[in-house]
Length: 316
Image 1 (cartoon, rainbow, N blue to C red):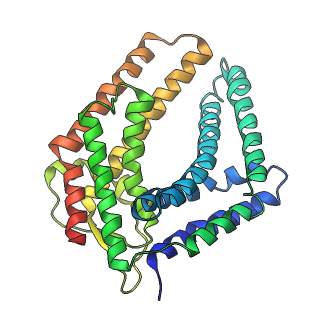
Image 2 (cartoon, one colour; image 1 turned 180 degrees about the vertical axis):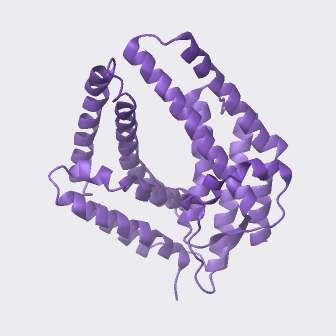
């Protein structure tokens, strides 16, 4: 009999092993791992380890969460520096400085990734085999119990996010620890949904409240990140109304745009030593715009409440 909890780790794990195999045959191990979308796969394994440390053996899954995260953090740093280098590549005045700073950072970080892949046992499969063994020996819950635990943990994450925002811990006027951290925590809900491998499904509702229409953009509705894997026959499922999920996806995307803008202004200031008055005003306006969007999402549209209610209806 299929154990869905165990099975949902297999697809991203096999994808990771394939990427590692390609990286091992390339002279630039770290560069090959980065270019083959290793980060996307690691996000799913992180998400599953993160949620199952609350459902199962906290010590074991927390260990693997940190292992996957340490790789993903390096990939994130490479991605940031590569993005900044590309941003200023067409700027004749700043290209040289950008290449020297961000280009060198990319090389250094890629070398560090290569070192980690080789020295931590990732490159030739020792580490993934250990993870396979850990999964095989885990005491998994039955399907309906797993669905209930998974759903409750998603709701707990949503409530923690709301609580931290209301208490001022997630301050949008602090770009990294506030705006970005809010986005990061909300994004986990989307990744949990995709990583559930069919257990979470979107429920299409024909009549959408006017207050939620602004979130239902063509880009969001057609995004591959908002298409759930098909449920397996007889699999217990969690249904989330699509307009609520799309609202969450819209906010994640928009906060990402503002975060990237803030990083771009910071990089510009670093390269030039100062930025124009117009750029300063734009940079200063970002937190206020983010705060208004967060307030609308949480209070006016009550999307966190509605997402939680959808999930709890499915598992009650």
